[in-house]
Image 1 (spheres, one colour):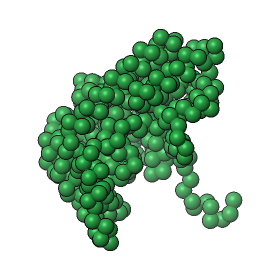
Image 2 (cartoon, rainbow, N blue to C red; image 1 turned 120 degrees about the horizontal axis):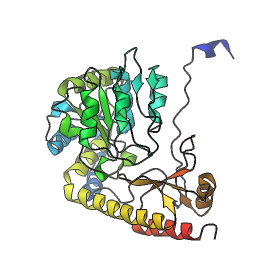
Image 3 (cartoon, rainbow, N blue to C red; image 1 turned 90 degrees about the vertical axis):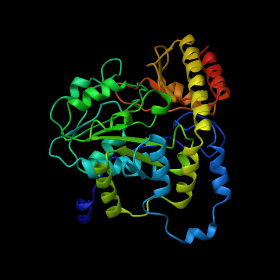
Length: 350
């Protein structure tokens, strides 16, 4: 080791899903298989290229206001960032500064460990139970903050608002973050609880239900004081995080509610069809309430099946890990894509 290396911060990075350059059936990164709302294309066509020489609005006021109207909150209760990963990273930096460990499940979004280690935040990971469900009583003990996805990833399990509120009632002296990247495919959002719990922050994204993973738009909703703290940290870090194109397209994606609801419903219908077909083939999985299915088969090695699917140009996600080493995470694509997947699985190892 060279002398200067002892002062370099080293972390084990998050490994994103593979992004193949050629045409495949891509069911590995939970992207939406349908295009964004038509207004997004219109906004792109009408972009004034000359404005690109100017900095974007640092407050992202148009997008913030549009989101505030959509969720019936005040503008001061909305924070936006470059994808929910950027928003969550800013939350870790801003809110998790206690000597006590923060708490998040042992099977969950693996970026949480990366941020905790990057920012040198102590953490503990209470184990989900044998059905992959979060055990709420494990979050009653003293801690420096709580974060978990709902639905959880990669398990796809959604917990109702009574469950969320129970955790909030036992953690009123720390920040509780509910990461709702997939909530549009599930049930009620914890945004309903923000007026009752000043320590609650709810994070969502445009990457899944709104078909805009490539635009990188995420947001947090909470009480105005928490949002001010987030903005103070953001402006100390990077004042101009959102580019002009994302801001304009983000507004159009929110205002077209009918298109949004139609395509969320289509994905949910395809998900339910796929669950039935997988069950017929002997696969088992938690009852998915996300846009993916976390599936296993007692007769198949998941890593071998992953490789066989990839060889057939069907990409799913193999995550590994001691408790989930025989599971695959399968994004819900179009009905045609899922039919191709099922046809492959029906003939696998025959």
